Image (cartoon, rainbow, N blue to C red; front, top):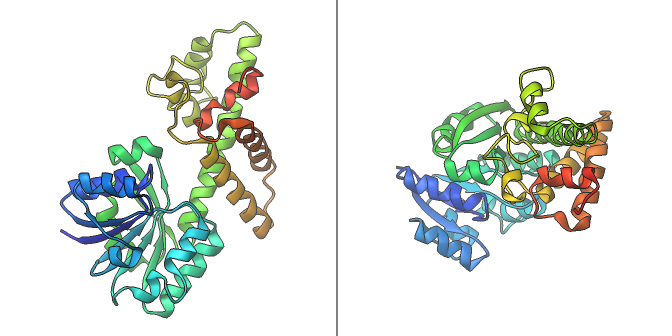
Length: 297
């Protein structure tokens, strides 16, 4: 049993913390939302009244935060966790943030003799609840070895991507592929509709040929072929369009900084921006097919 501090109990963090409790770990949790904190307590965690209180005495601290701004505020500076935790505490940020902030926080931790891993996840809310997330981890190999058994309580795959920031790099590259492929799959289904080809027939053919991809076979944007997909629940998320837009914009920031040409990634970010701005921030990202179809978004 490990003593774990967990900060950030939203749609992803809440079920992740609950799975750590189920695995037998002692979890002390904090969130700015009293409702979310109460839910974590109901799942077996101990409540803390601040980030520092959650981290006090912990062997490992996990965070799941909205953006790099919150991560920098929680970890950095004189009042942050890096300055507050005991020597030897392992810090693991599971938020999806920009690569530059992840690397800066890791360097700040290293100056105090600490290790801070960036470990963003893939798998959405369903994966968080089912403990089937994929963790992409950046940071020292020693820190990864310590974190791996804890992360495996919440995921099906825990992969060491490389040095500090590599986890965030992997996440934004992966989700750029996902955003682009979902748009391509949606366009194909809309074209099939216009040409009189039944969607189930396109699925049957493309799922067994060169059009096969995760956006088609695991998360099909039209109802029917994949019963577990959000398209069968009126596009209730899963993974919201707002979160996809955030990741696509992070990818574009990184592309500009790195001098990489990503024209399809840029177009995907623009399209998801239109979709979100039309009032669909909390719709599943696969719901973009409704905008592509030209119907009610």
